[in-house]
Length: 333
Image (cartoon, rainbow, N blue to C red; front, side, top):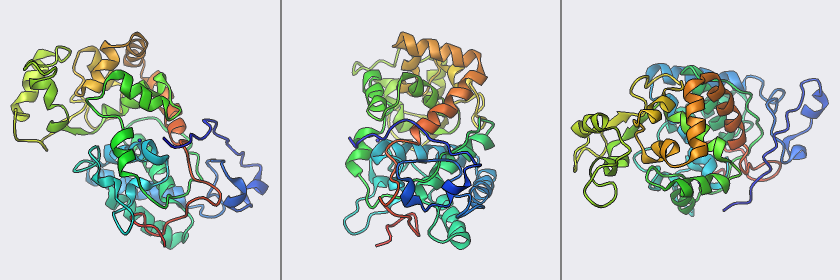
């Protein structure tokens, strides 16, 4: 979403150690820290936040879309901006993969952020770091937790269509398959549950959960773990055929607010994806975590922030590896 995993440790450099910040990025290989751009582009975080804020104000769905872009980037070749590349030359874009095709969005917002950053600090802030900051800002703008984003990632020189198809968890994957995909990235069961909570905002297409409504096990019957009245409501705009792109709120009760409503839905058997509902129905450890986060939003927010930092540290390119793209959609050379 298998590349060599980076250490899960995040090194945060105190501001007092200003001398460290004076060294060029090549001397801090492997180290991500929130103050990475404090000297080279001090306005970077404000520029990202400004563009993201305007985009979300214009289109509330954009918050979930930008958060999802960061997920789909990190789970393929690591958090390296590969998801942003268009097809060109020897590069086959990850945008064409099954999880991304006709689904991922927000690329124009990333373009706008990058353009503003290039004017302020040419070839300094990576597209991979833009994704990480935009994901945090999108979470905060919708009422979710904040966290210090470790920075210093560089951008990939290629993409992986096969990696995108194979490594990103899918709505119809089994519980064990999804857990394995997380573990292969150095993430654990608590990260799986907390990060799944991002489905508290955003929409899903009919085609991504239709099977649950009509033929979940190949016997023509709906998914028994989907609450009957909710299933009937979904069928109205998600028929057996047609309407593939019809959109449905992942958390109908508060679709634009980042809260713990997602976990309450799971307890009520109203998780939209089978990959969501199975967190409550198929594993004792994840069930207990679902109950915990449903009952205590602060606990969910705290773990979500920790898990986002951990996910953001999956196999970053640092030092002299990769590049700082001038345009996020294509490599420099």
